[in-house]
Structure formats: C-alpha cells, structure tokens
Amino acid sequence: MDTITQAIVQHNPPMSTEKEPLRAPPGAPELSQAISGDRAQVQSNSLTESSVQRSGVVIGIPAYNEGDTIESVVADALQYADEVVVVDDGSTDETAQLAQAAGATVIVHPQNKGYGATIQTLFARAHDTNASYLVTLDGDGQHEISDSSALVETCRNTDASVVIASRFLGGSTSNIPLYRRFGLAVINLLSNLAIRVRGGNTTISDTQSGFRAYDASAIEAVVETENIGFGMDASLDILFHVVNCGHNITEIPTTINYDIDGSSTHNPFAHGFNLIRAIAVEFARIRD
Image 1 (cartoon, rainbow, N blue to C red):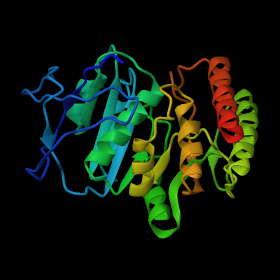
Image 2: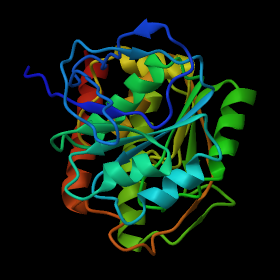
Image 3: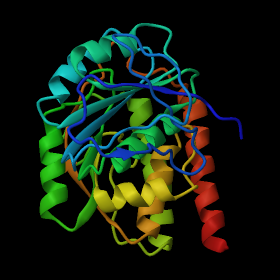
Image 4: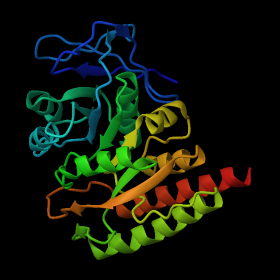
C-alpha cells in the first residue's frame, strides 16, 4: 500500500516531553507531522511528536471544505474538551488554516480519502495521546456541541463504551427530511438485525449518527482492527466491531439542525448502497 504523507499542525504544544511515535490504525495511511511557524509542511514519516498526558476528553472533527463553519465549531468544542482535533481531508478551501487559528490541532490529509479515513486518523490520534474519551462530531454546525458533555458523562457513569447522540429517541429534536428518515429506518432495522445475530442485546435507534463518545477501551478496539472502511460505511463498521468485542452501546437524545447550507455532500442513493453493502459484509462474517 502506498504511504500517504500527512501533516499535523498543533496549535498548543503538548505538556509532556516524552517522545512517542504517532501511529495510524491497521490499513490506514501512515501519519507524519510538521510544525513550522504558522505553516504546515510535509515531512518524513520518521518524525515523532511529544506524547501528551492522558488528556481526558478529545473532540474529533472530520472536515472537508468546512471553511464557512469550522471556526465556530472549533470554538464551541473547545469549551467541552481538553483538545479539539480537526482532520482536514484534502480540503480545497482554508479549512485547515481556520481550524488552527481557532485553536484546534489539525491533521491534514493531502488528498481526499473519505469519511472513514478521517475517522481512523482521529482514533489514532486519541489512542496515541492516551485520551480517556473521544467525541466525534461534524464540522458543518449541525450538532448541538453542548451535548458532548452528556455523551461523556453517560459513558463515564454507565457500562457503555460507546454513547450515540440519537435523532430518534424521545426528547430529541430534528427536522430530518422525510426521505432520509425512511432510508435511515431501513438501515437501522438491518443493522440491528446484524447486531442481534452477533449476540448484541442493544437496539440502536440511530446507527448513522456521527455524534458519538468512545471510552479508552473502545478507542483501543477500533485502532487495533482492520475491519473499518475508508468510506461513510465506517460508522457501521465501528458499531459492528465494538459489539463483536463485547462492548456495550447506549444512546442519548440530541438536536440536529438540517437548515444549514451544504450540510450534506453525499449522494443519498450511493450512501445507502454503501451502507447496505457494509451490512451484507457483516452478515457474511457472521456466517463464517
């Protein structure tokens, strides 16, 4: 596999001086990093960065051309995290620079690799900085970022290793379009069937919510697997994997705002096809 060189721009220097390599999860591009004034430069993969102390809460934001919203999202997220990490997935706008200026640690994919690749990079970062919790959310401003605290507290105070912010639980607020609601209902039904066949005892109302919290054990489980894809189906792959590893999943209600320009750049039919394919792959693993 070709090595994809990446760069990390760290806004705030780490606390510890202990050196430790930053690793990508199996199957993901290798990570490199550089800090040079205000400009990120691509350097050799042999570079290392200082390891930080266990940081508590890391909020991770996958981003592609989110220049219109990323500053405000990062600013809000910093109120609820010890570190905010933005993975700029080959943006052609100033997403990376704006995120850095707002106070985020920025990891740059020089080429667009897809949602799953950005998620894998976020998990690698959280794992290698010994984060106690990783919260993932979108960079387009749809999520109620203050719910990050409730996600982490639920993770901390229950036996759940993964907590999902659901658009469909009682108490949630969402103006989700009808066609999306119908498609998600089908995906949720099939996904829960696969989880049940695997022996999971949790019914997930929103398997496609990207607003989630993971504890350290779930972070480690995801980093160590090779079964996470690089596309949008990664969200399902992660759920299947953590269930297979015996981790518990729970949900809390949340508010999602769809009245945002450019809030979704994914073709719903292609997206749905990829999710169905991911479910089919999981059923094939179950048979084996």
